[in-house]
Image (tube, rainbow, N blue to C red; front, side, top):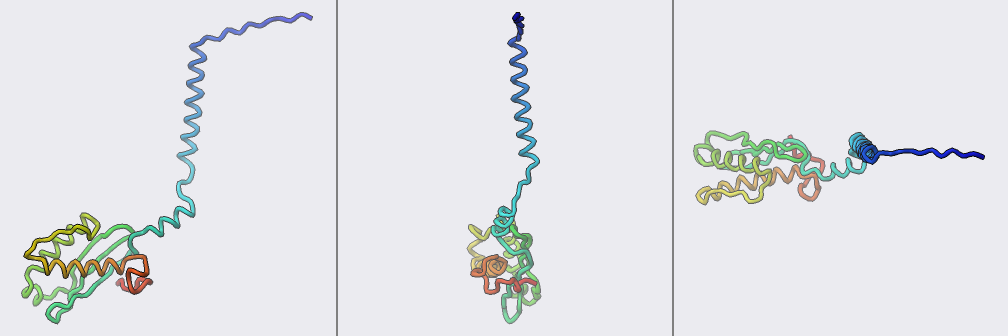
Length: 160
């Protein structure tokens, strides 16, 4: 029974390089798995649908000013206020209330910039005009709210 002894010589430098490459290979595999797994599941998709701030559409609130109807129109998508306009603005209204257009444009610009009705400031000399317009915009946004308690019509027929 003769046994031959085999001697294996391992260089420390080669062991370190091999260890580093094995660790990098494992990290690469983990990265590939994380990158190519689907990010959304059915539960996450339904949860994100419930967190939408608005029901997309165009919502209108009417104001009666000196027997003339002026509509405030708000266009929204799921999470943003996209546009705020005054429609059906008669010349008689702009003649009698010359501040209505500049005040509305200023309010609309601030609301579109902040995407909120909170902390909207306006000048003291435009207090009443600004309050009436803000209330009309707020009413339109309540119609766009997905919760039935915020608007009278949960089906969203308030949109045009």
